[in-house]
Figure 1 (cartoon, rainbow, N blue to C red):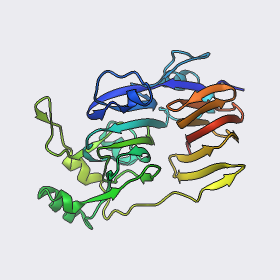
Figure 2 (figure 1 turned 60 degrees about the horizontal axis):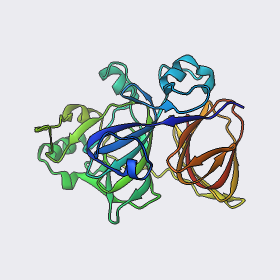
Figure 3 (figure 1 turned 60 degrees about the vertical axis):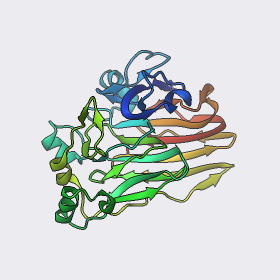
Figure 4 (figure 1 turned 90 degrees about the vertical axis):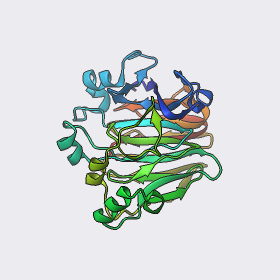
Length: 311
């Protein structure tokens, strides 16, 4: 069986970030505004690194470029997924991402960005923005031009354990008091629509109104992708989303569980608990890739897991 690839995250300082990624998970951070831990990343803007074993010290991008057999010889120029833990001490900007076609033609051949959020934890009364209320592009442009954000934005109350699928072209924003696991396409293209008038280094952050108007879908309805949970031998599994770009599942391990790995690769995020996988100790905040052909994964312990793979 192939060894599991445990990864050290790349942590990113941002204006709206906090300290939970260090205090809760013990990640190495550079300050008190750490908003993102790129826990599984081959993106050039921030790469995760193998922490042990035969490939220790290698970046995920190096493995993708040099050892494609670990990923079932999957085709493509870039590793397809990017997994983040996000700690929002303040509101993120109101933003939208392009799809593949728009990004390819307007962003030098880059990929677009469809994503999804699992609410790991949040403050009481927390909310997020997903979607808008404009029915046409003309109405959308008028509401943006007039600054009618309260009328435009769709604000949704959230609770721990909620899940949201956010396809490209969806207006969205994580808001303060929220800790999120984000599964997304491997892309770092964000069009900022509104930023609350904040200053960074004494200047407003750049907005991308034209690009946002180009890619925002109108009208916009939220799609519920979560399937019914299934219990077997005391363990609970639930399909959160399966779209053309990725499939994401949630698991609650009571004591022991066998998980098949028939995919080109499988990403596993340990959200809660401690135990072992194939005899290797694991705990809350660990993230690893089960490579192609590694065989079944044998989990022992009380664990909460998120897995993802390409569809």
